[in-house]
Image (cartoon, rainbow, N blue to C red; front, side, top):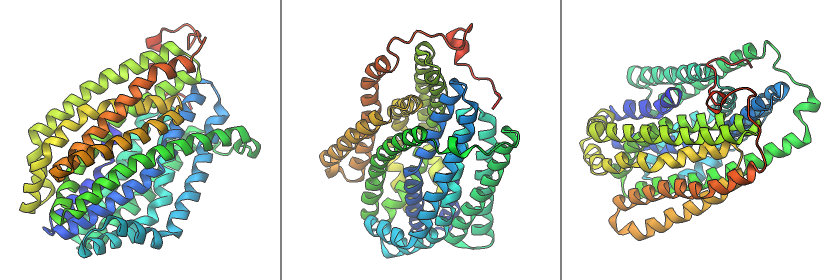
Length: 442
């Protein structure tokens, strides 16, 4: 959770730094570009998700050589995708910024940010793989250290470049690139240490056909699922942009609240991916079921805590994030939607982690498509209420995601663990079996 909570700092610090300039157009530009990068990188977040699942399952199955191969395969895919994004940056920026349809000033500012930060793509995706690899082995402290380093460097560089050297929106983008580069170097050093200098793996094992096909299939389904989720956020951002610069900026400020909530709850999802994946790899239904119950229970408690914080301190946080009175006033009108969201989103995040840990990727894909249709239906029904209706549709989407997965879970559990009665690890209770040591061996 702590590692994830540092992740929104890039967007939050950029919003605060640009927001202190008091220009709603610049704030809207960095918000628009940040959302685009969130969506672009999010589309390829299967690199982290599948790496967690495959690594945890290999830990449970005691496949040491495969653990190393998973990291190298992930880095190869990250380099190919990241290089491709850099190569098509001009048509990509034109397509995405044109589709969103912000004002001329906002689009111009967003294009400046985009043209610089896109160079971080290979670095970001490689760091996704590294983070997933560490989480998959339950190296939570190392994952925390890496994420804190990336985001503190980004935050410090953003403040320095934007507010001290007056580099504007370009400074915020440069800071993100610098931070991701340093983070990747740190990740490589950590991997080298954990593998005792044996990062390489035989080519015949690295490119084993069965492993590659399974990776492709799971990643494909997670990517389609994520694309459906991104469609919701792009639609949300587009509707906000068309409502005017002030509404776009207000939604951008509140979106940082959602990011905090999402990354906080995603800490439990990451735990579910690792623990459920490890139990799944060892074919232990009892440990898997116990992990699911714990994740949901702790998720509910965490969601209520986040809701209380937003309800109590939401207006004050809005004032910190922007100096524009118009943006502040607009954001306060919708802050209660943000306060409610964690209690609806908790089941979506918990079951995402459970489904990923068990690599039930096809089911995730299908259910997310249904949730997307429910979101669009809710927006059509509520569009007369303007921006409030848009926020209401978003809450419907949260509830649909978790509810559909909860209904599907019992059948998948029965199918996946049919006739499995193995107790794992031997000689341990279920509670002991899902308790991961702070620094397990690689």
